[in-house]
Image (cartoon, rainbow, N blue to C red; front, side):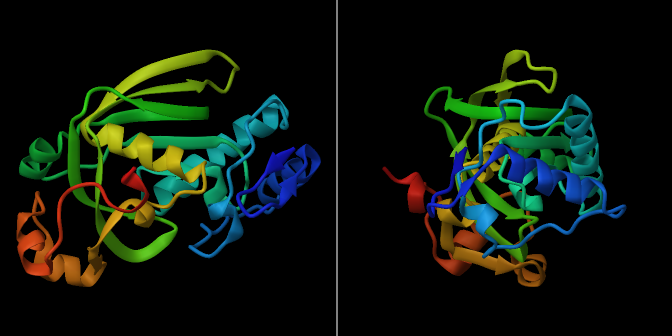
Length: 226
């Protein structure tokens, strides 16, 4: 049984019913937005609640939703499913200067179950990021440069993999979703910008111009501060 941060419990049967309803709808499901309870719950660890066929179909659907959005990651709670499952993929063409500064390189498709990350070293990087569940906004978040991700593959195998740069940012963001954490919980809130204002004033590879103009620090903030 899954226990949410707000105290609501979900049985395996309820999770299966939610997944089957989404799979049988015949259309791409909407991405739920901030304020939906699934985004503030610690999702249930995957322990076989779904058949292998259901799991494969859900992963395929999540990839389609991610591409349609478009985005580089999607967690099951973003579809209203309180389950520890996320998909990531980054194959977008990016400005070379921005890619170099952000250490952003292509990331092949990956589906992860029950992920958890551990920082490797003390290096941090601060950049603007957004979220498909917080439409129209971006903010600066300080994240670990390098992490070790431990997870299960869809076929049940235990795995671990090191990520760095922008790829590390992606897996941290998606893993946070599975623990009821949104990027705004870790953001420098004075950096918060609408997509339109970001494009008009702060769209550059780094954040120095925004720091000066909006008056924020580049270090950890919110729940990132212990």
